[in-house]
Image (cartoon, rainbow, N blue to C red; front, side, top):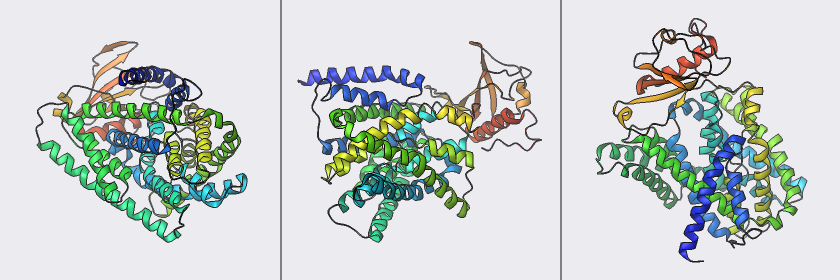
Length: 501
């Protein structure tokens, strides 16, 4: 096919994928399943487009993953995840180690595979998928601490799992000692963290002081800085994924020019990376080979979801408690166990041993593909139900309203949108009784499809949407006060409710 035909086909796929996102959002399915479906449709069993290079898939997949992690860092609110980071780091390290070892021990006996293959399979499935988790968090309101754990974990745990898969794939040819394995992993993580923590602040400092001639250059510069971090860390034999996520996290929470436009640009780039990544992985898969992987995949996935993930969360919670990082409640542990979504990342990681020529790696790829499809279909749509049953949902949470214009940035203010859900004790509270801090005000209420500017005596009702303008310095206070009133009413402070979690 000529270049023009490829461009036309690529544009048609992207448009079809964008249109399908709306359907996926309504049904609660992560979009990755639809995109994988497009790839399968275009591949050998569909239109017959040939693609069978795991090496190419690995390189494209790791690059797309870097873009997705950069967007995850840029769009993560540090004030929301700050208190959750210690537990998330434990989940991304201790949790990953527990996941690899336990899954390998169990499936080695159940499937009759050798130890190294079992360890590779455990490492490939140890990481939760950033794209899947971020898409769920955008539509499922959770308390800040719980959402922060999920968000930060999915950003941090890619780095150790990639390192583990690479080292284990190499171990198929030469077996390093456990000490060497742990030392190499630690060094790579430390180098990646150092590069990310260096490039992020330096980039923010430079962008605040360099007046670029066009506003559209700022988003490009920010995304380029994340890849400077990624490339620099890789060249220094460190973790590029940890570096790119930390750099994005620092830049995304710095007061930079045209920050809203930068977030929008990063989200667009991440969506494009996801579409390309999932379609490519669908092309790489061969449906003819999948039937033999169904039974082993279902066995492995069931063990992963019902045994390994809960043990990983429980062990991490105990370690966090011992280290005085706080205790994760049993309800939160149960939800974290069910919300450990696997997506494209395990499939990308499965290309690493395949590209390295590890024996049995094609079977690993097929099993992981089956696991991702089946258990994403099972877990994704049920997360809202599970959150309600465990009573961890928080429908009154405030969230950012996307604003494309720059005046709020110049004023160092944020625009928040609060939806009043059924059962919230915000119902019936007058505006002045909210007692928002100085620097914050309810500027608009949308009720029954009509908007109006409220008076101080206007009563809030169920299903109202409140638009609140808050300065950057008091934003956290505003969110805590709204949560507190929603839970305990206008006398929340009297009852000791501070809206902290």
